[in-house]
Length: 365
Image 1 (cartoon, helix red, strand yellow):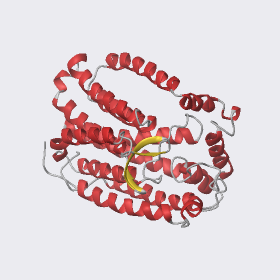
Image 2 (cartoon, one colour):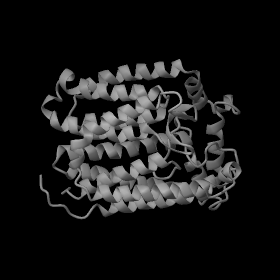
Image 3 (spheres, one colour):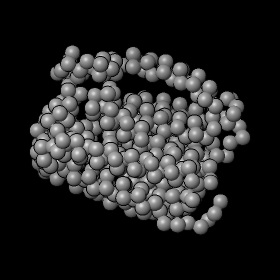
Image 4 (cartoon, rainbow, N blue to C red):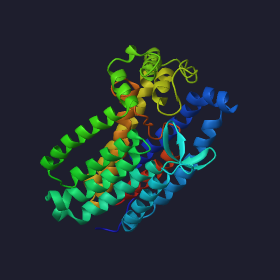
């Protein structure tokens, strides 16, 4: 492939920075009440988000100016390290429990989620593996079983935490990479049936997951229990109307919507900024996905193409699930909205990944 690189895709940069800016404003607006109540500082969440945004932007600048094929050499090492972290986080006394999942490593209030980093590590490794084995992709045993086995092992470790949401995003983005790499549809369809059966088993194995499914179908059947989050989210979105109640004027963030600065930040955004604010965010995500897929389709290097698809896939799957949950089309899963929701590990990882995508865009036709 050509080593001559041009400027990174300007539309990608605009959409990323615009979403990041909106996210900073909304983290403060949605989280100020909870931050003051819990920490005595209404700027608690936004100050920490700003710190991780700066770290993420530095990382994005670095990866944007580092030739993306360099990461191919470290893909296997990165995957092994992430697997090690997923095992370490499960050890009582080392991994911290937050939100019912033992998924954090860190000191005091600062921590990282190894499962977040596994998403990017898995995409990097699968892109390398599938680019190197394109001739074998038509074979079920040689072409499909190895990547699916590695993905399944990572998903299993994530489910031991348990963290179904992050695991679902990783699997969704990974399957997208496997599909576009040339895997046969009939093989994927057969495994899809097995996956659906396994998913049903996971739901039935945990009462709280089953409660989320039943509450999704009829949240008002348990308005103070399993259906509470979905109902309060809709109560936020509805009054927003076309132009919203005004920035900072949300009523639902006053201890009605749980975690308004993370999983349900879009419902607060819709309440304060209305349909206009909500559709603006969605359009920016669509631009990001469109330009990212355009990069994947116009670069001649298979590794770069698969990697671009995987990064875009992480974003697309996460946005679909988060927005679906917020507007009541999907069961509650605990997925944040990329670049918008509060969260250090997620924000830093996404900006790092976007830097890689921007670097790939420098070599696209």
